[in-house]
Image 1 (cartoon, rainbow, N blue to C red):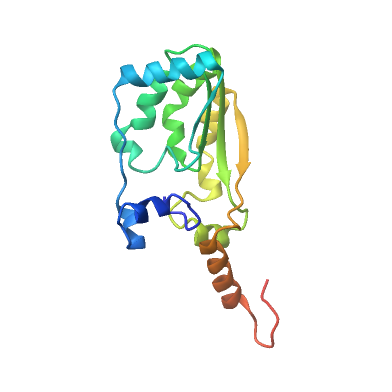
Image 2 (image 1 turned 60 degrees about the vertical axis):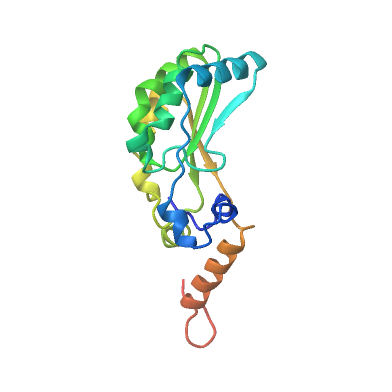
Length: 183
């Protein structure tokens, strides 16, 4: 979704993609077979570990609609009773998997978290230009309701150099003549 504060951008630089726009256009899809995925999930369940999706990048990026990597993971997770699973997203695509999330919630521990950086719509457009607007994330509520797992997870990107730079540019644009600032 190309959020300006995303620390996963540096992974692309590490891979030799130095054009920042490449982060917007090139997505690496991790493929794995269902058997090894299930074995890893069983091991996590037995150890009591929480499996967290969306800690580095959103598991429901637009390409998920095509590749269904997250969906396959959820299908494998459905076969592991007692699994502790947490999903953090800002995408409405999570509602596609509402029935799977409901099954997971009944068989284990599940939380579906929606990442909200700010309630300021203009600032959100600056920081997350291609992410669904806050009110557009409403369809995802059905996934949380079906799963009986509702939580909002505010994320503060203020430590990021990119965010400070964007905020500085935004502040400069909103300064009113005479030194004050516009509301």
